[in-house]
Length: 165
Length: 109
Picture 1 (cartoon, each protein chain N blue to C red):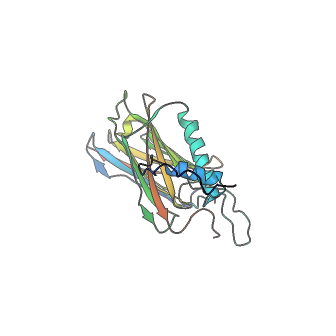
Picture 2: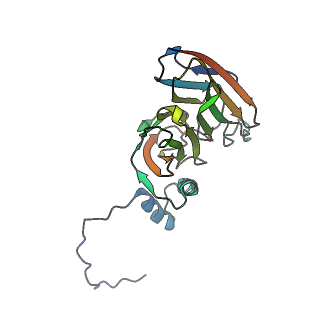
Picture 3: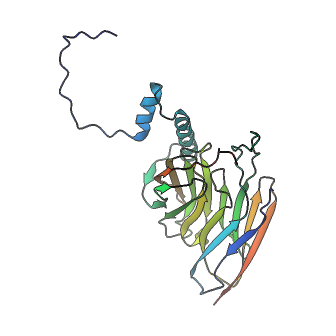
């Protein structure tokens, strides 16, 4: 690749960089074979595919669902995760299910919880495995068929899942 | 091990009618996800609890399908509304489709 030295000077650099998501960034890096953790990228794809399979073409909105996950965990073997969905939980308007997906585990599925109006309240606490630092997605499906999502990112210093026992 | 060795289920002993109560279920189970190796380099075969259901006097109030991302010794905690005195049951199902269950009594006033 030859670049003439007398090339016209480029336009002044603008610092109003458009919002680049972590995912776009990873995608670009992967395209140049520079992915810092190429396996992780494949897993992000898997998680995306799993989420797409769930929501299909429906619009997924943010809000109504919140997730608690510690921002830094020492040990990925057992991480307490809780999800709370705002809903009156009546027969007409309740949370049908909550789906949890991991972007950095060997398989994206964590668990799916199904609620009924008699649950009273759409809350769920469980303990999950995290193979590496990653983002977790929670998607709530309401009785009217709408989808609501949230995500949380966490740093894991000791991995779960794949080490020897 | 496929069925859990030990099960725990916690619900309040007493509650008022209409009160929101918490159900906690814990199972002693390795939840082998099929990705780990033993000391000889052999893959440890997958062995999970697939599902847990909470029943209140036989009516299913909550269900969770567990996948590989659930930690060993799975804990599931959710809520229900106290409607009548009776029994809350947690039923765990393993990869072979076998059930193990545990119950706790609740008195509703």
